[in-house]
Image 1 (cartoon, rainbow, N blue to C red):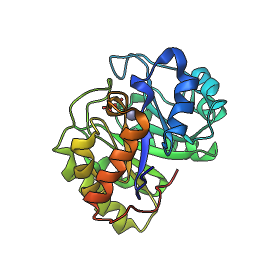
Image 2 (image 1 turned 90 degrees about the vertical axis):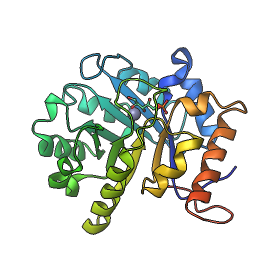
Image 3 (image 1 turned 120 degrees about the vertical axis):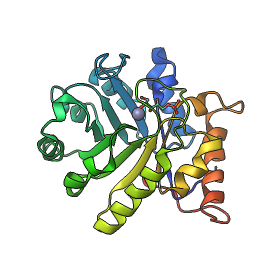
Length: 238
Ligand code: DX5
Ligand code: ZN
């Protein structure tokens, strides 16, 4: 199973919601580095998915780290429930009305013992992350408009991803740079060349003709090619 210095974080948004525990186990066996749970409240985005009890139920089926991507109006409401459900990274959106006090929300995540992440929609400038960069373990550059899997990668986000990589490097802080949306064999090389090192992948895994393990391996191969790492790199951070 090919690995690379980047981490593959499967989104289960396009998995079988009737079998999420088994799906989580399958992802671990297939070589995923972590699992990305897409939480939507039907208000912040025009879609409704899962709550903390579903994630807690899946927690028993895998040892993979969980990150939760909160596409919700007010992430404060259930913050501690995601930690109780076994999520070690909690990603909030700068655009959420409940994040009007973003510095306080990110501090609250850290106080709960979780790793704070900030997601920026395609229309949100990178400058929104600058004042809180010192509070972040992860910065997520959305490469689709949130709400659904299977959308087309927005290539113009590569300049924002590269600027984010430069901002993180200049800060000297260890902040993971993640991209989310439309990541597939045809786009993953561009995304890592722009500086992303955590790749959320949903539909591209589930539609791969040879299955999820082959899809993950193929992505790592393309990542190594893009980074010109002959023979593969050290596995990415879980
Ligand atoms: C969209 C979600 C993404 C998306 C990724 O709102 O945040 O995680 O499901 O799925 P694909 O890889 O299918 O674009
Ligand atoms: Zn997501």
